[in-house]
Length: 209
Image (cartoon, rainbow, N blue to C red; front, side, top):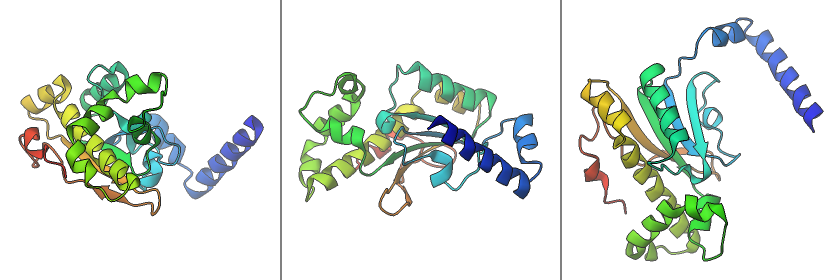
């Protein structure tokens, strides 16, 4: 398996060199992405692929169900580096329909450590139980919960001291919420953007459904 992976890498590198001889030299010089992407670890949702971007154009943090925990030092460190060092001005929280993490958060079965990680999604499910109960199927309910999780993530990112400091010093940064459809390969805007000409007060986006 590893030899196959290395062979595929060698073929990819050779094709890149052939198509654009200076490609890797430019990438090696500096990292200058336009986007910071907070997404799900699901192998079917690679950020640069679904967004049609090349390596080097998007700085990525991924975790199970794209949850934004206020105490997640991994995420916060990546966010701080993106904003302060890389000068990224477009932040994207992206979930996807058919998310296994969201599905697990709606189940009564034990999932080990994942149950602790997914607690914010479980809280959302309880808070919006009435709205979610109007879904016509379990799949629709879980997909709406996936949307809620993205919008909540946008709010949580916008409330971090990292973003608050950046906006106070005048940085034109926007935080967006997108969701990806596994069945059609399309990204959808959840229209919950905050900052840089969008909503000034994140609280105004709290009616989701």
